[in-house]
Image (cartoon, rainbow, N blue to C red; front, side, top):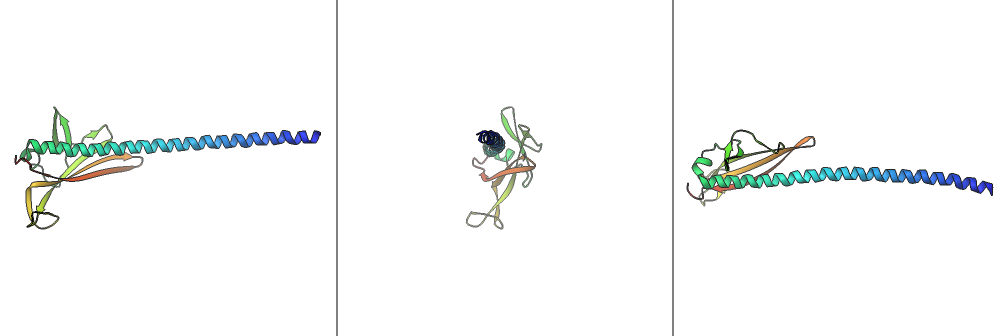
Length: 162
């Protein structure tokens, strides 16, 4: 009888040690998964913010187009990087880099557009269309050890002949 009790006592300590190891491993695993989930959530939030900033830039440039094509759009040099600033309740294109929330860099470029004999936009050849511009907006931010960039392109036209 005495030998059975000695074996059972040792077996109980082994079970406790294994149980503590399993619980510790589970807690560390859950912590690692939680950290990964937080990083992915933060990255997803920045992607969403960047998408909204892209959309805002396109809308701001449409506002500039609507207020005066000749002063706000046609006067900008093609293939040149510009930034948007909002001051005194007005949008304006500027050559000064402006960081949004200290994180995002947003810029845009206009490209000249050519049209063929059928009035279709073509990538080469055709005749220049002074009343249409291709707009490309970029939003960039630092993500971990790299830079992430999103972009969107759209065509805008001199809708109101102004």
